[in-house]
Structure formats: C-alpha cells, structure tokens
Length: 439
Image 1 (cartoon, rainbow, N blue to C red):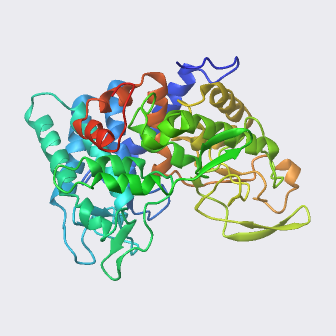
Image 2 (image 1 turned 90 degrees about the vertical axis):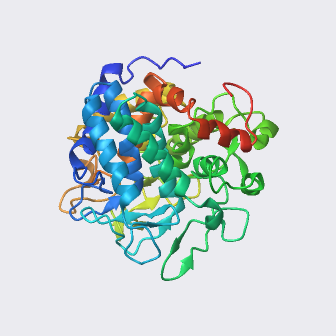
Image 3 (image 1 turned 180 degrees about the vertical axis):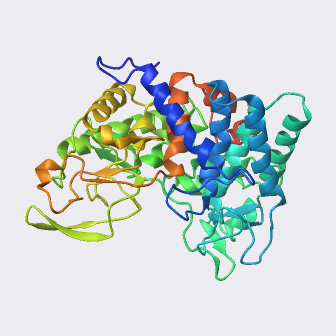
C-alpha cells in the first residue's frame, strides 16, 4: 500500500520533470561511440561502469516515458553491450575486464582500465543488472532486440563468481593485476544484496547457498530513534538493490526471524535519516525535518575550516553515514529522492521544501549532487548571507541513476514488475531462501 503524502508535497508533474532532466544526463553525457557513461560531469572524468549499468536501465524507463524512441534506445543499448562483450578481456593491466568482471573506471574513449582501479565485483553487478534489465525489456522478435538479449545473457554468464570468492564463502570486493585480490569482502549488510542474488543464480559459476548464509551472519541489528532495523549507515545501501528487486512481502531467513522485509527495513532507515537531521547532534547548518540525506556523495573537502569558532574537517567524495558518521554537514538530495518508494509521506514534502528553498540546487540535469550549508563557500561574505554554502560542481552518474529509477518505481512500479519476469532474479532469490509475497 502506498501511503498518501501530506499536502504541499512535490507534485507528480514535478517528479516527471525531475526525472526527465535527470535522464538527460545519460542522453547527453554518454559517449555514442562505445556507450560508456562518465562517472561525473567534471573535466576528464573516466567512465564509471556502475553509471553505465544505470544508463541501460534509464533507456528502458525513457522509452516508457517517451523521453527517447525505442529505436534510439535499442541503438544505444546495443552499442554498450557490444563494447563490453568485445572489449579486451584478460589479465593484462590495461584490459577492460577479466574473469567476466570489469574495472571500476575506464577511459571514456578507449574503454581501457584507468585510475589504477580495481576489477570491481559490485560495480560489475550493477552493469550486469543493467544488461539483464535491457534483456527483459527489449523482448521484440527483431534482429537488434534478439542481439540485446543474447549479449546480456553472455555478459552475465561470463562472470566467474566462484573465482571472486578467493577460496572463502563470501565474495571479495575485487582484484588488481598488480597485487591480486582485495582484502575486503562483502560482509555486513550493504548494497551487495543484489550481487549475491545474481551470483547465486549464475548459469555458469554460481555461488553455493552457504555463501548467502555466510553473508547474512555478518549482519548487525540496531535500534536508533525508536526504530529497530538491519543497520547500514549510508542511505544508498538501503536503496540500490531495491532499484531492481521488489522486496515487498518477500523474506529470507534473516528477515523472517525479525518479522519484517527488506522494503520495510529501508522505510525505517529513511525515517532514521530524517530523525538524525532533526536531532542534528553535530549542530550543522540547515539540517531539519525537510533537509536530510547522508549517503555517498561529493563534498567540499578535503579541508579544515574554522566555523563559528570551531575547527571542522570537511571531506571530498565520501560515504557519509548516520548516526556515527562520517558527517561533515554535506547532504545529498538524490538520497532523498531515491527513498521515494519507501516513505513518500516524508520524501515528497522534503522535495517540495528543498526545491523552494534552494532553487540554485537545480540545473540542467535536475538536482545537483550535494551541498553543504555549513561550509563557508565565500569567505568574504557573512555566513548568514550564504544559505546554501558549498554546492557540488559536478553531476555524478551514481546519483542520477537512482533518481530516474526510483521515481519510476514509485510512480508505476515499472522496473519492479519488469524484473519479476527475470528468471535469474527469481532463481537467485529462491536460492537465497526468499519466499512469500509475489514469489
């Protein structure tokens, strides 16, 4: 059941306009030669394979909303999938991928590894999920759409999830040709929920079911501000897997033992974020009932500034979290939008307030990434005359995708309904022990 928002909320027309402006990031920033999407609009930004996966989903939404024609979306999707299937794949340091996974950052023109980045299991997951979304959506019996389905399935089947375990039950964060596997593993509740679902369902290198159980054993259940929930500090963790999977009414063993589902967990996490902002324990400027949202986002640092007599530390791009930080006063509007399906009754009024109070935060691709009212953007002026303070100069693909996708899931449930048809999603959920509801 969708809870009706309070009066004076962001309207459906305003949501569609925000969705359309945000979609234009993928329409205009993508390299038409290879389908790669930049990590951000900053000069010289490399491709982010996560942003590229989000673009593949955005094209499907765009066709539904008539932001783009089906033929144009098919062309863009094919360009992207052909690139990833045919790009250099091997153990050499400048390849595009290895063992079916891809490097986190790629050169926008050549598609080769850049920034000394890791072969990323989670970013590859989002790319693969984007490809599988395209395979479900482009289901016409035409040569082009048959090729989309074939390429998406081939890309998914190539990922060697068993190799990515590196001899243990859980999955590693990734691998580098210079140093081997990264020490960190996907443990504790995080955005890897989607990773484990897809890895369990792999038609070629599936994880054993014990891998999922090993992951959930590392969960932490907490109580914050009168809400009990499966803990994760940054808001994006409670959102990203939900962009594809409708967790309403379905439960794994862990959630059955707690009497809720992952959707309800994300609703509680959204309320906790708002309550943290209302309490504002670090006394940052601007926080309140309608201004909240700590997540992975751009920031004004690295810097140390004296504000109201105190020396404060500010970060650049960082996974900000509640309740114990990091928190430097930086908030991300996209994190609020991406919680829309979970708690529209607090999100829509917040968006309305934000849109009216901070018009400088909206530009050609919708809401800018993040802002920090506490950070003295212009030290020559009185802070009282700077209601916004610092504003991110870039748009990030990691932010734009969730806005497009979660507005759509709230308005129509389109992506959730689409991915209910995906046999890999159904199989992976089943192998993870999910049951009930639409399953």
